[in-house]
Length: 115
Length: 116
Image (cartoon, rainbow over all chains, first blue to last red; front, side):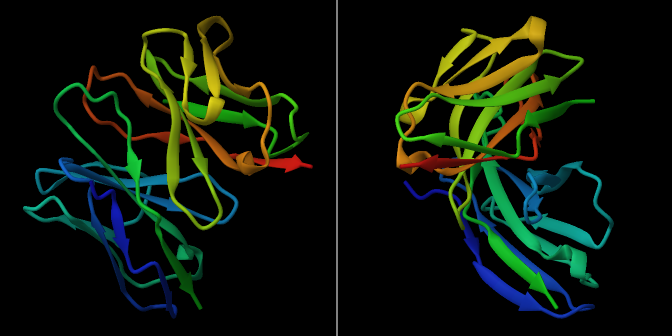
């Protein structure tokens, strides 16, 4: 049973560039959430996608956008990169229906460095 | 609004000693509470969760946590530390929507070091 997979694992960009990160959820899951984890900090909620729509959003600017595809996979896009966007970006999947208790399953993350 | 406070950003214990990592939460509604562990350069792995059933929750790798509503606490313990327990531990809270998925609010983490 494949868990949550993310790509790429590492990438380096320069200020002003754009980046796309990808995530495939755990088999059977239909909801994808994205988190940003800055060095030495806890993960911060960016947004959540379910049924190909953004359902919830954290306190992040519009430069951060996303998409969910019919197969439940998801992309996170960040435009006009700033140095402060350097972080580990974590994707988490879950099941919206059924008897789930809010547990999230995390991927290993994409580490973005902005120079 | 919900929030989590983890007391102690760094905790060091000797191998075989008791592990106690502290977490206090704030929530205006019945919470779900979680402990996750993160090993270097990896994602987060769920250790255990409280979902309004038993207040003493047992998780993987010998860890357990007790939900104390009166103290708004959910401290993580392990009777005997092992070298492999060295990692960063995150406490998280979410709202109890009776099964609906909701966002997790994480604490700032506690880095556990285990000395030989």
